[in-house]
Length: 138
Image 1: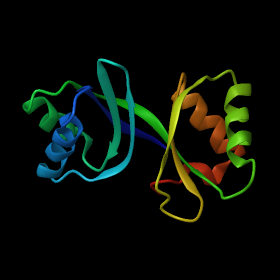
Image 2: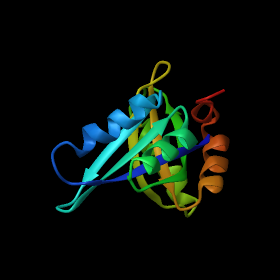
Image 3: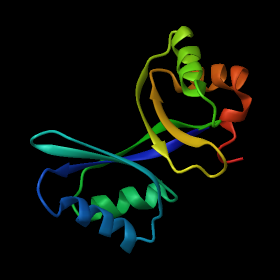
């Protein structure tokens, strides 16, 4: 299922992450999944939240640069090789997986956030080969 992800650019210094997380808390925004990457100069916090528009507005009001973009949330069965088969299916359709990160599973198995070069195409091929993988919010 295609959902919104909030990406927040963070200065790479102590306290910036806790400040960003505090803004979400103050706004009553619940974090469902997150990924944090860094370079020497900045960090990139990617979060799946329950209120993406409100989260983006709260970040902007406090001076943080953030963007909303679409990503694919899929459910993985707890089976050896399942993720490899799913990524292989997407790749064979000519779709690049740009990044992915895990999310807490809402049921047995695991949930995964994926950014691909073609979200609609990835959704289509995953639905065909792995219909159980796209029922994340259903």
